Length: 384
DNA sequence: AAAGCACGCAACCGCCGTCAA
DNA sequence: CTTGACGGCGGTTGCGTGCTT
Image 1 (tube, rainbow, N blue to C red):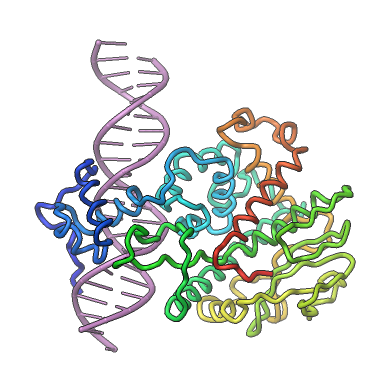
Image 2 (cartoon, rainbow, N blue to C red; image 1 turned 90 degrees about the horizontal axis):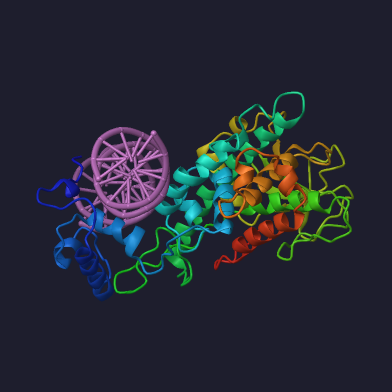
């Protein structure tokens, strides 16, 4: 098949857009919608290829784009999501209203990546470079677990994307406030297609939040129950996330508690050998996750810990050295402490804990806000 | 003042998946 | 089933700008 050469046509302009070109493109889309991008340039009187027009619109001219400096909140979200999703900018962008994937990508490459690098953290793995999780202290397994969480989340994303596609066929999804990177023009509905619902892909973040809350709650009488979580944490209970997938069965996400308090709707774990994995709550989309896992990867491949082809776990339960907890703690500190806005000193490698370690309230606010971001999904993510 | 350099960002490139004919 | 059009996405490039020497 001969690839379309639309952008290599002789005579088509390339390079920076002029204000006149922007005006033409804007006026045309406001009047007619973008319709077919290929046909648009000729109709709009532009000497550009359709792809160039689409990019200009998507990344710059869309009226629902916020430009300018990223807020601390946004930085935190990007780092957090990048740790989970990697370079899946479009997926990350769906959780940052009014930001484009391109903008996020640029910001990551020019700011955040360097910042983490300066901190001695590998920006790709989000792990400390100097073998922070070296063998013998239990951290290496935690790092592996983090990777597995990301893998699992990635699988979930794929499943959700499939769900979104399927739902678009049968169920109109009015979401006027959703501003994903792939969002089409909202100025006209003549030819535009409503953007897909935001992926419901932050279940793991909620699980993480459970870890952080449990850390914060240790030694504190404050109830740190998330206002948005449907999980009920007993007072002072050590709640740590567990993510399990039974091979050829269903995916589950739940929390282990040290007092075996189960919520309604949970199912008893089959993996209760340690008296710590008491309760699991079934994911609503387990079938889709399973389908995706079955079709895209071998469970054994992503679960070196599966000893009996029956289940694999991500996370650690009731372990005072809780490796996931350490990861989260470190990440949380990075997120909260290391902003260009007011924490430059901490970037220079100074003692993070001195300046930030005690700021639990701020950390909690971060997780609260991130969770709120998740819960603000217009699709009403049916998680947990 | 001017040359060199580093940085940030808009835009491009090429690959891939989806869908209709 | 094949083909081609189309749009989405992530990686990369190159230009403009500001800073340093």
